[in-house]
Length: 129
Image 1 (cartoon, rainbow, N blue to C red):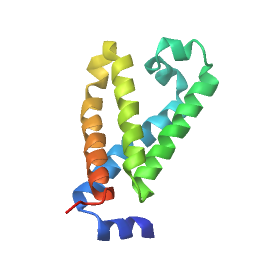
Image 2: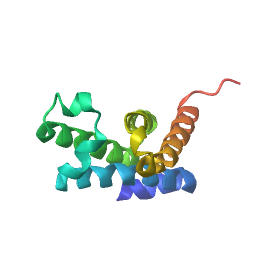
Image 3: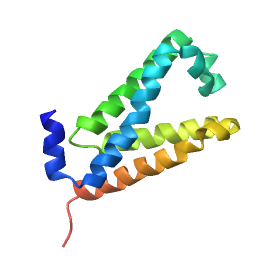
Image 4: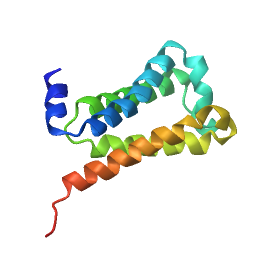
């Protein structure tokens, strides 16, 4: 909890909101997929769901989502999880275009990931004067 308060002291509030806003859908989807894997397996591309059993695929993907979400909330260097989340969201979008009525919201989540990538990259790169 102290890390959250330290982050609030050192980062702009809008970046903290973006970090929590991006972390939430990853953690929510991970928990949801572990509780109801049959509801979530359809979001995976056929080449994955046909070659890897749902009993491995769902928990592995959920673990990655939880790691990314927790890293976004508590991590100091958020460039890496921001890039990973952007790549994951692009993949979800590309492989689920037929579900556009459901995944259209992911475009906004992707925009948040891109904002965090840009922000963390700019703040991590030494400024040349």
